[in-house]
Length: 225
Image (cartoon, rainbow, N blue to C red):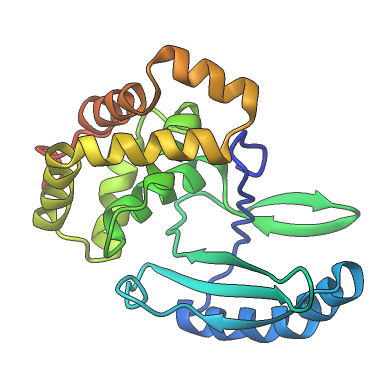
């Protein structure tokens, strides 16, 4: 998913540890490595912290905030969220190489199914999960409906919770369409954004994703089967 036209990098390294422990490790790593490098290259000070707020207690997603700031004549402040998502993997991890470094990561199918987990497992819906499902829907497998149901069971996400979240997507779709239009304007490459707008923008994306959830992933009626 790192090759997305949306300006977000999804690393999704394969790691079997506790999500909260990983969050702590990431705070320590970014504090030691990222903060000094940003200061050296760009002159920004900064700090790393665990995210707080209404979505911070989700058992499926943890977020670390990298906050950078510059004082003086041209003050500036940037916040970069680094998200850690729990992805139950049904496939064996695959090997990817980055600048000669070999890492294990989840398969494309496990990763896009992880976006479904995020969509239904967060405390509150994030529109970026919706657009990522649209952009990477070709990574779903013919049996992804059964795979996603198995992952819901492993994470104890109930059929009632899934049905409730699906209803909220339908009932509040006008709001999500506006959020998707904003993401298209702010986070998507210009040429791709123009094509998406011509094809219907956020309304088209909501149509496609709701159709994907209903017909290909058998939701919400099939979540309890």
